[in-house]
Image (cartoon, rainbow, N blue to C red):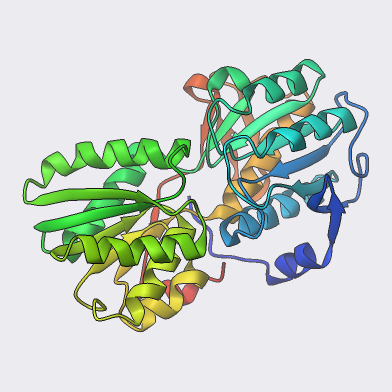
Length: 345
């Protein structure tokens, strides 16, 4: 399921509505619910999004989708988060949101365990917890909104790099943080998928910590350490953009392939100048939109997170809760020179 309709106005409104909360940046908007928090209960549609870190275009887009959904059903949208995606940097935000009595917290976890105690305290206080993008341990949340199956995400990245390097040669992975749940799961599955490509060798995995400059430097180091490298996979939007920026002005442009997970707006210039042939992603705006509607369904008691529960998610249609309280958004989408002009996020 993929939608190319974007709301440029929503992103502008998101930036313009910035306010300081929790010693970090926050965004509040809404037509109902409780401003900046709530009193708990089935009518409390105050939903706060807590991404891995602020200033990340991927999460800016998912939050824009969430804000669109929350405006549709008359709730209150807010976003808070740390400046850096470290394992325990989200704990203080969760504790404060619990004290504020929000209706739901939607969080992309920097670590599967580090925030569990805080999330369970929130749930004990009546706050619904929905993870999206990167999950916690299942016992720490009510639902996980999965952007695509881990198997599908791993396979599309291996398929792309195999096609781009002629199915033979050395490759490396430039990931986010070493503790990132989703990236680590995809990497393990990519290693399994490589069994179907016996002439491709994974020679290194490095971590840019979802920081642009660190990822840029790690790319340079990879190319110096492995002079026979033919391709890089970066399963993170920050990493692939930084790696593309390095390659685009280096001697390796056109000789070392780069693919992974990126956003069209970040990667457009590198596709158009030939640095990158193709990359993949889902629509993060749809991910945020679906997460918001799932939080609403939990708050209103329409679902409990049990397998087989169903709920309606606005323009995206109906969804069903699967095993382990997981809801699947859809399949990854491949962006290339033929279609990247059709997207704006």
